[in-house]
Length: 130
Image (cartoon, rainbow, N blue to C red; front, side, top):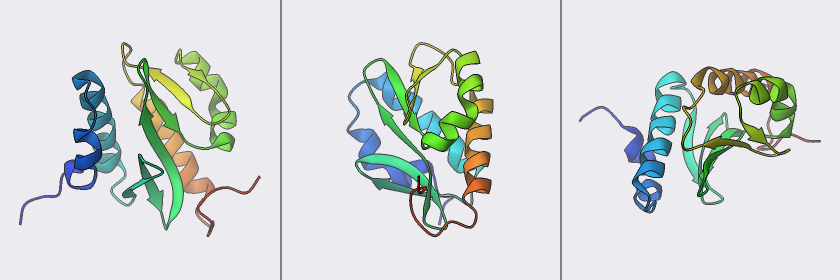
């Protein structure tokens, strides 16, 4: 049996993306997360690809016409708001907009994912409680 690829978990979702730039961009990010954080579990929920740790939400992704939407939860966005702004990304309380025509800041993504893994290590619920 061959080595598992990110396509094994997300191929149906990725194949539905008509725009090749968006499909490649999201596939690159999903593959990077899977390689960088092999202990995270990939899944599709709420019609978006996401990664969980011990069945608690860590990060989710979705596509929009102009950007990749990164959803790490409000507490994480609040924690990293200055870094997000410095990277040149817009954000709301729930998501970060990474434009398709700009490089993905993988250092920022790594910091966000590490933060959520550590912050939620003792969580039993899927989402953070406010």
